[in-house]
Length: 93
Length: 238
Picture 1 (cartoon, chains in turn orange, yellow):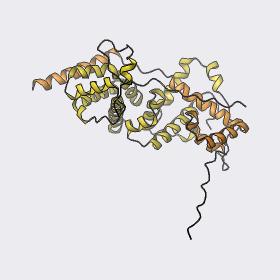
Picture 2 (cartoon, chains in turn green, cyan):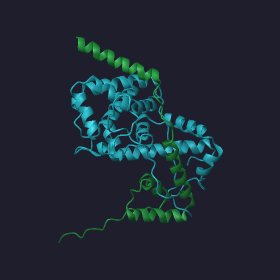
Picture 3 (tube, helix red, strand yellow):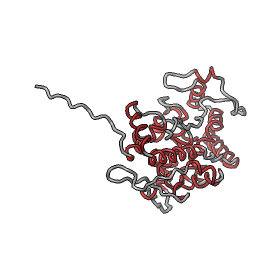
Picture 4 (cartoon, helix red, strand yellow):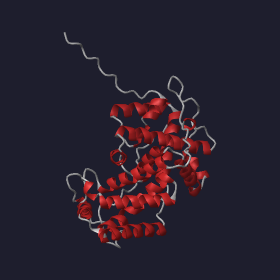
C-alpha cells in the first residue's frame, strides 16, 4: 500500500528569530500570503520585533541615500586617455 | 501597534540605451526604451553592443560616457581607493571592447559591465599584498534566546531619532564607514542592491552567486550595518 503523504508543515513565522530571517522578503513584499499573515500577527504582539523592523528598514533606506562616489574629472580623463592610447598603439601595429 | 507599510527602496538603474555623445543627460524616448529584444536588452543597447563587437572605438567612448559613473561608484565602494578604482575602470572598458563578442546577450549589457567590474575589483582585493583584516560580524548581528526571542530586550526603536539627532552628513559618514568594514563580497552585494538598485537576479548574474546566496549575503550585510548604526547611537546591536 502506498504510504500516505505527510502534509508539509507550513513555514511558520512565530519567533523573533524567524521574523528577522524573513525581513528582506517582507520589505520587498515577497512573502507568501500565509507567511505574511503570520508575520503581521507576530508584529501585533511583539514590540521588540516592531522596533527591529523599523530600524532594519531605516538602515536600508539610509543606505539607499548614500551619495554616489562621483568619478573625478581627472580620473575620467585618465581612463579615456589610457583607452585611446592603448587602442591607437594596437591599431598601428 | 502600527505595522510597517510596504515600501521598497530602489534607485534608478543604469541607463539601458545609448545617447549621442554630449547628450547623455537627455531622457531616452520611451518608445525606444520599450523596444527590447527577447532577452530584455533595449534596442539602443543592442545597437551599441553591435558597434562594439564590430570594433567601433566611438562606441567604446559612448559606452564609457554612459556607464563609467555607475561603474566607478561600484569599484570605488568595493575597493575604498580612488586609484585602484581608476585601474579597474581601465580594465573593464578595455575588456568590454576586446571581448565584446563574448557578450551573448543573456543579460543586459549593463549587468555584463557590472560583472566585469565586480570581477576586476574582487580580483584586485584577492591579489592585494595589503594585510587583510577580516571583519568580525558577530558583535553587530542580532542575538536570540533558545526559544527564538530577542536576547537583549527591549529592542530600542531609534529609527525616528536618527533623523532628529544626527545631521544627514553625519549619518552618511557613519554608514559609509560601516559599509567599508563589510567583507568584500557582502559589500559588493549591498552596493549593487541598495545603492545601485539591481534585482537579486541581476546581482546573481553580476557576481556569479546564486540568487539564494545573494539574498543571504544581502540580509547579513544589512543586519551588520544596522548593528553598527545602533552601536554608534549607544544602543545594543542585538
